[in-house]
Image (cartoon, rainbow, N blue to C red):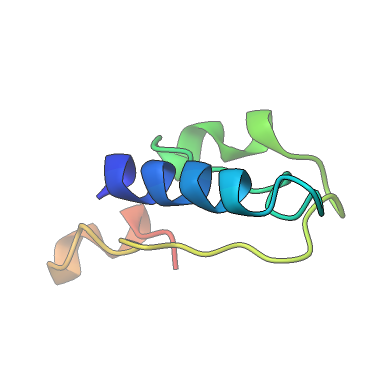
Amino acid sequence: VTNYVGERIDALREQHAATGKYSNISVIRTNAMKYLVNYIRKGQLSKMFFCFPDPHFKRSNWRRRII
């Protein structure tokens, strides 16, 4: 999924190269609980999308969930 989204972003950047749209969009595949604070600062983002936010569906792992 990450590769597809990255390729789609690249295609949109090429299509809209003259206008400069899609220049500030990215895909990050990482453990968000540990490393997200290393990528962004507070107040830096206007939107964020979590594609697979709950890999720990069992009740005993609720504290490992992102959302």
